Length: 308
Image 1 (cartoon, rainbow, N blue to C red):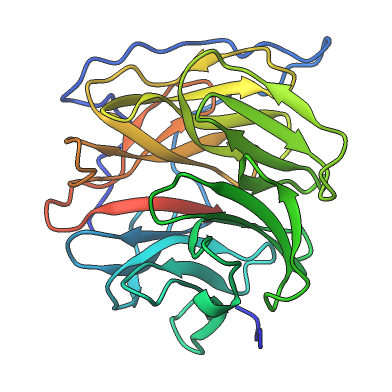
Image 2 (image 1 turned 60 degrees about the vertical axis):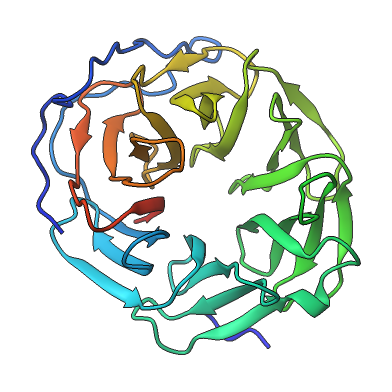
């Protein structure tokens, strides 16, 4: 079935409405530094992101939000992602009985259903998260019940077939180029594992966690840290070291995404507990040089994904 698939930036300046305390100096693995920033300024690549609450749809844009295009005009789209080769955009649709994973060309054409509700296991009819294998031949799906009391993760072929249980108590979130899968368990710990569920490593940041994503090099995890009514963006090494708060704000900072080279992180800060009125911000991976990319009261930017 699968057929492969603003506003101007405000400049490199501190966030004007909130006090920000920057946690600096990411630790090294062994003697090699994970990343050392060298300069601020615009960056390259292409974004895709969703608008959940207001002018609903999916957008693409350059990484500096200068050229913005609404490529999908539809209600209820969530979690758009570039395929690993950047040829297509996949996304979730949540409404009534039509829960499904879809795929389309970057301009919004050739829209197709990839995985639909009838193909999901009994009771687990809601796709909470998903992530692509590096070669785009498989998907890891986080499935849950309507009330989120049961969560299981599966590996499926790209057309939704050949489903295999990966984990019965964690939610997959990211699949690295090194063929390792990152999942979150009980909103408290991360599990890093092979696609067959073996070779597991437990990472405990010591706080509530959500929305994790592995860095392109597979050495760091960016994630939403703290309670859902007030959360920041944090990073931690895959060995459990180098925990760092990149933001310390009065907002709800969530949905972090790495730049293709791992030097920056983009995320969506919101201003109320209903996750509405979100804009996009960007920072170096050590938390310095924060940039407000959008200030759009009539568009809620969410869940950015960044490709080269």
